[in-house]
Image 1 (cartoon, rainbow, N blue to C red):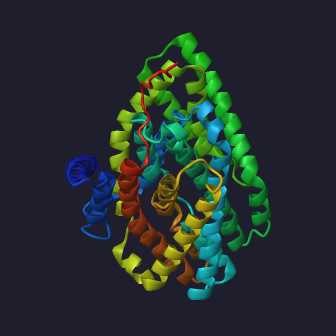
Image 2 (spheres, rainbow, N blue to C red):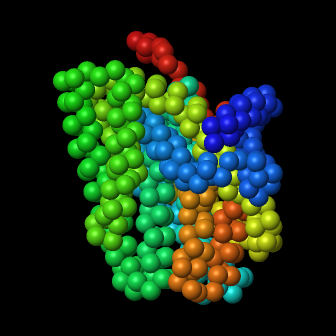
Image 3 (cartoon, rainbow, N blue to C red):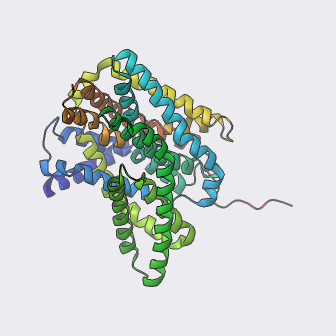
Length: 408
């Protein structure tokens, strides 16, 4: 397994450099490395590495969400808070609803099977979006209107919302008739409890750091470990108490940035270094899950459904931005930023199929859901990453870090 990790690192670093030379996002190359080395192509990766792939992807996802949390300032969130809430829910609802209708009509799914497909595809990928927004925050492009912060926060909450809905639909499909009502009620509750727990833990960590003053590296390791345990708590409480572990992890960084800004910047810098490795592992292992044969099986119908969904998401995002202070080009950038699919689809795409197998039900619908989930990754992750990079450099306004005083 160690040899497979070493080979992935070397190949991804080389491909990342080559793609950047041609002004393409490096993560696209990392995805391709995973596809080529994965079990559906050369089958070169160690099976032991693939068996722990879900855990490694979770850790990498937590690293990027923690980085997002350490970039969310209260003042900035206050400016864009209403738009964050709208963008976190409305585009996902629009996309999921249109995919549900399209799948019911085109694929001859039942309404519940179609809704399952909609919930799998509707989530965006913070692993694609957040690194780009952190970059624009760092170079102060679009920061005057808080565009990177708005996109980061909304995309992260979008994921939590969609995963909660997906869990409820899957429970309803497998016979838990009260699951959907419970999940609808639990969406706001899980977010509130998650944010509250994260704020409390962040406050306790601030006092711990003041008293014991551990080195920045130890602080980072402690925060990552707590974030992993929060996700574990979410799983343990599932069905009993709704709790959003991913949002809770983000809230930790928000509190530390608010209370101990210098310490927050040190931790954020360490997380940025860890992300160099985590990014490679995340996208290579996501790529390794991509079966080109399964993707091909979804055919033209899958492509049409994905495009319908993306169009609905774009219209929903445009409606959310209608009364904002963004100009037309900036609105297009925000809309495009909510297009990439990757991490969530890789994590839950096979869930319906596995549930159908366990329940002894026909699996044809689950196989199609998986195929379309894979197709959405291949179609939107590379194109979305490239479009965010291309438009961001040309559309987002460079904020002057040293504004001139007004002339009297």
